[in-house]
Length: 373
Image (tube, rainbow, N blue to C red):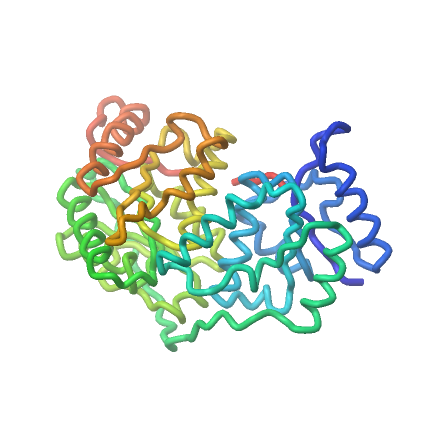
């Protein structure tokens, strides 16, 4: 029998979405689906997300969208974007009868306007407003299939084999989450400048190890300035984007989730530059881990670079709006100018180092996950 995975957690007898979920379960069972996470009590980690994708034939997201639900939905969208073969032919339905998913969709619509999301998310994340419509949409998706994401492999499959440790005199490492597709020269100049700033202040540069877009520019800026630059990537994305030159350390991982985990483990601060769905995904993971008090994120600052475009649009306004009633002060700070980023991360990195070893309060880095079902 085909297997469908539900998202969402039942919050007790008074949960306003309990009746809708019960109706959905009945309809799916009657239609012949086996259901994973029917009670909303399964746990998912970054290490096993891909396994859950492999074992499922379809995905349904329920009302009452949480950060965890949004993380999983954007992860599937990113999987479609990056041609994850384990998602081939598997539809994703979002039941949005309470409109709780609207802020999530607003972020994706804005990113498409900003040019970092090329695909129409509505073609991949199919939205309905009633449990009965979920069944109709599953049938429709099965008949028409999953759209082509419009990505093409460049044929590059080289693997970097480098593992140079962070220099002893470094104060730590900052992970830069950003776009690998945005080619606006002003954004690229900011990326290179940030890489140089990190290197000049003895801060390692951790990235998703893409050669193109802002991601490639950040690595180039760090490497050209003599900095230590590390990154992680997965085979099928390397075939789409290639690898940048000059990496000091490279972590090859089998999927985007364990790739994200190793980047978080090896970073002491996080800078969210202009990006697309992948950057959205990564920031949600950081916020979830902070709320869970996950050791991977303990004391690590997060800075969102809310750069203004030539059209006068702040790049991350819809995402900041989404997080405003789901996060608490201190979860992240917003920088509107490139010069504001370094002062926002340095104090936190020094506190981490002091906690790690008071005698080394000015140098070094901290090594380092569970998501609600």
